[in-house]
Image (cartoon, rainbow, N blue to C red):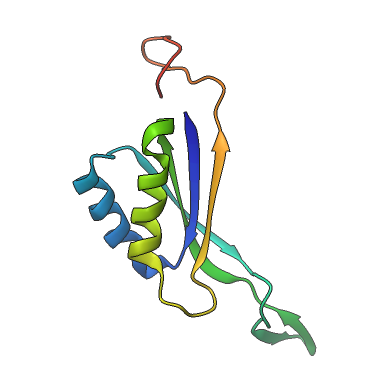
Amino acid sequence: MKLVKCIVRPDSVAGVICALESFGVSGVTVLDVRGRGKRTRPTGDFRGRTYERCLPMSMIEIVADDDVVDDVVAVVIEHTRTGQFGDGRVLVLPIDEGYSIRTRQCGAA
């Protein structure tokens, strides 16, 4: 199993979730996050000092079987890519074990 972490623009989350549900992936976690990438960052002023602001983004986390990870990544990229800076990132991490809290079973998350 793999954990797919997608850092995307907040306005694209609903489209990604709908596309994943139609693909058969139902379990997702969505977090509101703030961050910045490599590109020139917007700045702000606070009490006479200039600082670099972090931009609001959303993180979608999906636990997927190894055989569907490539399809999940393709669906996410298809529904979030605008070709502009700030489209986000998709990270794929291995999962060694997953436990169900309710049933105490180890296995598929």
